[in-house]
Amino acid sequence: MPMKPEEVLRAVAAARGDAICVPTMTTAPAWRKIAPDDLSVTCVGFMGGASSLGLGLALARPERRVIVFDGDGSLLMQLGSLATIGGAAPRNLTHLVFKNGVYHTSGSQEIPGGLAVDFVLMANGAGYRHASVIRDLDDFRRRLPALLTDEGPLLVELHTGLAEETPMTARGGAPFHQQVQALYEKLRAQSSS
Image (cartoon, rainbow, N blue to C red; front, side, top):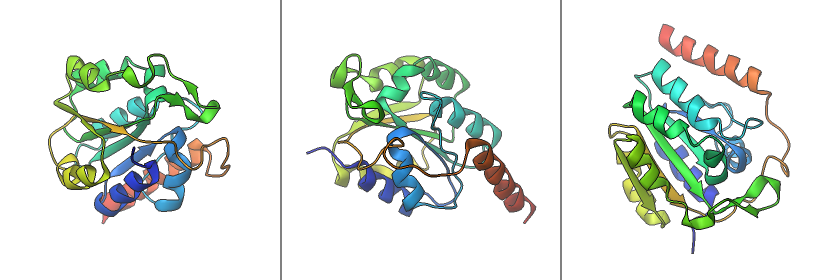
């Protein structure tokens, strides 16, 4: 039985410390409930942009872990980001790909290649330091501490079911520009302390 995205997010929220998180599409509504008012920028409205946004944050803040909560459909929209991330080699980036084989937010149409798409192979070929598959929540919990501390870029293909809500079914959240401003202010205040 595949993991539930919400279970994965709760595990990350409990272990992440001061990591910056970039949820997208199907992870966004649950993350807003699990970790409200934290160091996150939600990538909704520009499908496929989460990995590039996460790369920018990782390069700008190398002292912090950056965790991208990507979707398989979203990543396929900007697959070239894998090579860009591999080339930039940010040591603090963890790229979690929630793999369910469909574009969940637009009606669960199958993504090109469906569940056969191998993001681990692509990430390794693009130059990620390490890439792996996790199919089980207990395995994820066991490996999570290393995913938050090992040198990146790391990619993990998480075999999950569908999220309970999507951005299309669960409205809410601050506009992107307000999220970016809030994150900037929080990081600046923490740097001043």
